[in-house]
Image (cartoon, rainbow, N blue to C red; front, top):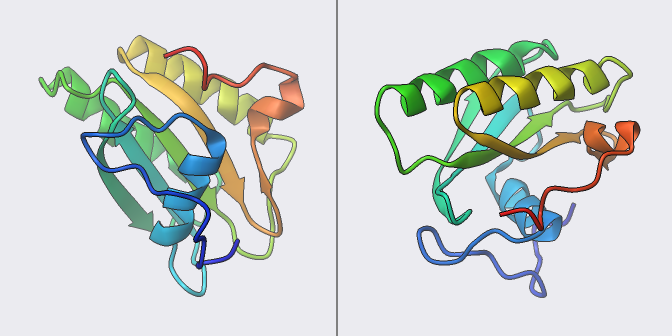
Length: 146
């Protein structure tokens, strides 16, 4: 992805909803390390899908590390942050990318967030190319279901 995206607007936190994969990927692109590291990026959203916060957990080299990040976010929600309605995740995997086991990770992550009272809008795997494990299942995007 290019770091210079003059045609892609960046949604303003607490003002503009993040309505598309393009908008989410623009935010992720600006958040990623240069050069990319093995990180998990979380964009936290309110109930109208406006950005509340973005954080990056570095050194998440194991593909299952995303579940540790999810646990932190779900704990924040259950401990009383009622503004938190959902999230967009990105697993940055330099030199690799999506793998077959990511289908099961998507299903588990989606179940975890739903049980925690949150919506996992999308999970991107950013590596040699960018992919959504949800696509491997043939599930429709969740962008229109806010």
